[in-house]
Amino acid sequence: MKTTTTMLALVALAALATPAAARDAAAGAAKAKEVCAACHGMDGNSQVPDYPKIGGQYEDYLAKALRDYKSGARKNAIMAGFAGALTKQDIANLAAHYAAQPRVVSARY
Amino acid sequence: MNTVSTIAALAALALAGSAFAQAPAGDAGRGRQKVQMCQGCHGIEGWRTAFPEVYHVPRIAGQHPSYFVKALQAYKSGERTHPSMRGIAATLSDQDMADLAAYYAAPATATAGK
Image 1 (cartoon, rainbow over the protein chains, first blue to last red):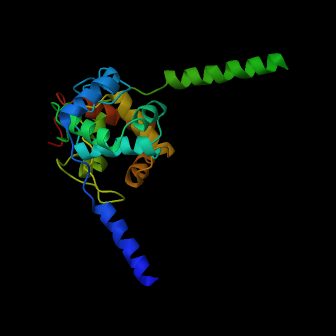
Image 2: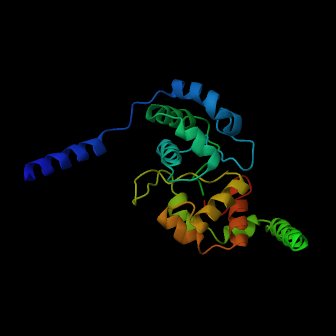
Image 3: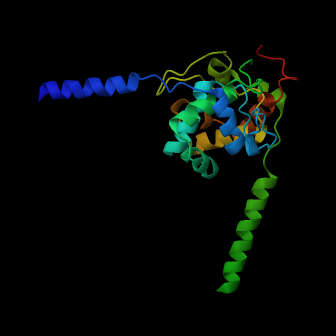
């Protein structure tokens, strides 16, 4: 019984430690064109004041935002619909694409 | 009864309208005086969160002011749940939010806190 519990715990830990899916920025670009670009732009430099600029944002933050929209931890009616339809791989790819764009947001000050 | 409902509805609309009308204008100069609480995390390139999940603290300079204010309001209301941001946003007035948004929106004119 104890061994089973320990093994389960180890499996859970291994799952946590599994690195994020390998990402493909080109596939991310294709997905972005289809899903994101209408509001955020292909380069993430949104021209709509209510929609955030995401070009050059940190990749891990972009992925976290998408995961949170998908899980419902972050609530937004529009983003819930889009993120809900994304796979883990899509999220990794999209984050790679937008993080690689010329930076329109900065941490400079 | 109908009249009362109509009047109530009109009053609610008027209130909503005035709330929009009174959305404060941001002042980047005033915002500059209020960024101490932001810079410790958002002003350091490559800085990461420690809790509850580890990821880079987002870059926020250059962001649209209206989105910036919406994000702060969502933290203040609890709609967005990051613990540190909830705590900080709770201390901000609408005017503070507008001022910070103005400051962070304008990298070209911002000179403080380099």
